[in-house]
Amino acid sequence: MIRFGPSGNSIRFYGEGYKSSVDAPEWLAKQGLSAYEYSFGKGINISDAKANEIGQKAKQFNVAVSVHAPYYINFANPDDAMAEKSYNYVLNSCKKAKQFYGNRVVFHASTVGKMTRSDAVELTKKRLRFLADMITANNLDDCWFCPETMGRINQIGDTEEVVEFCKIAEFYIPTIDFGHLNARTYGSIKTEEDYDKIVRCIINNLGQERASKMHIHFSKIEYSKGGEVRHLTFEDSVFGPEFEPLAYVINRYGLEPVIICESNGTQTDDAIKMKRLYDSIRR
Image 1 (tube, helix red, strand yellow):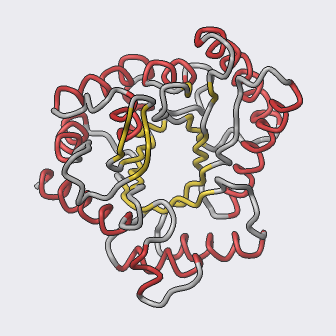
Image 2: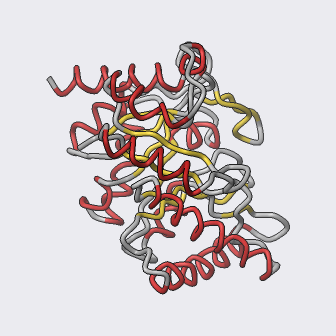
């Protein structure tokens, strides 16, 4: 089953008088959405009680909750003590995800820093192998761990890099952020063929089954020489990418991803637009 939903709560959610994420699953379900991403970007600071409350609501209304691990994870940090923190951020994010009745953890893999890109990638792979062992040792291998494609040039995370990371363990599946990929390639994603090339890379390397389960982030993103600058809304007509060509590719390959909209403030309305467009193509 393909699922659509927002990252966090939109301006309209609060504008309609809602104040707590506990209300989000029911509100989203009433609008035909079935996914919701809760971000721990600045730290894992939600109580067990509130996570369980949101999780119960999500289960009741058939809304799949994914979590985004803290943004400051960096598995290419040369400091082993800092790498240890990154392991714990991912593991603890997963433990919280389970309290949401969720099973997906999105995380940023690494940045280049002062290393060469190839050295940073190799160190990231080494650390992700160790992370995989820790995931298994903690009995968390019934969840999906989803390294994300990144939008800035100095971040590790183009399509090929993320696919290579996912080869390390069966429970690694990619988060393909098409806005990020478009930003880091200065607007190269425009046509069905452009999307098809990315999707085929994933299928050819990870197989149809795992590719079908991929996590997707989608939004329009402003970019400059360094890549990503800021998230936009679907109303923007200058920067891309557009969702319609991707919808055709998803339908062509019979994929069933979770698609999370990260538009700036309009993420719920733009998720609805994506779902309606996809449903019209399927019909």
